[in-house]
Length: 177
View 1 (tube, rainbow, N blue to C red):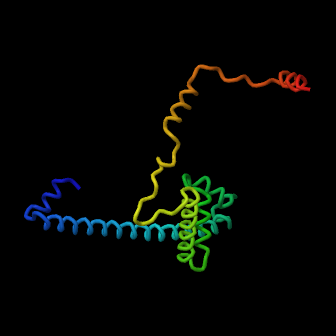
View 2 (cartoon, one colour):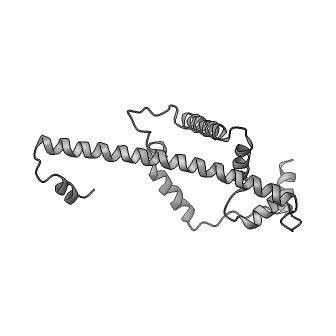
View 3 (cartoon, helix red, strand yellow):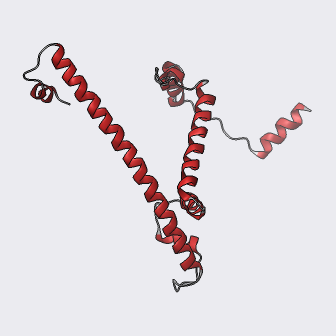
């Protein structure tokens, strides 16, 4: 939000009234953003379930030969649906086959959340609390100067060691005996 917009909303107000007004505006905007995100997640879930059902219908038609081609569904999928993975399609179809797909989708999201938490705990040692942010990635990286040294050593003009030939390996082996 630009300062011009803040000033336009806040012309008559001064002092604590201006702060309270802007604070209320901020809370309203954040609440709207949270609602927007929740709505988008719900729409995405509904869309993914619909895609899973559509894929199941296509699989049934193509595998029964109604496409005219003598190909399997997955052969058709690989050729006709570029940019989408088989694994994602398989997951969506598995969820759509369930008696209660919405519940299955929620369980899948919960499993993903548990996995992310375990991964985070394994990587950083503890889960971030709501009060503090997650540790910065830069704290867990090596010293940047060591990267520079390694990069410089790779750039040096020393030739790479020659690979050993069979005859040089034999001579090395027999000389040590």
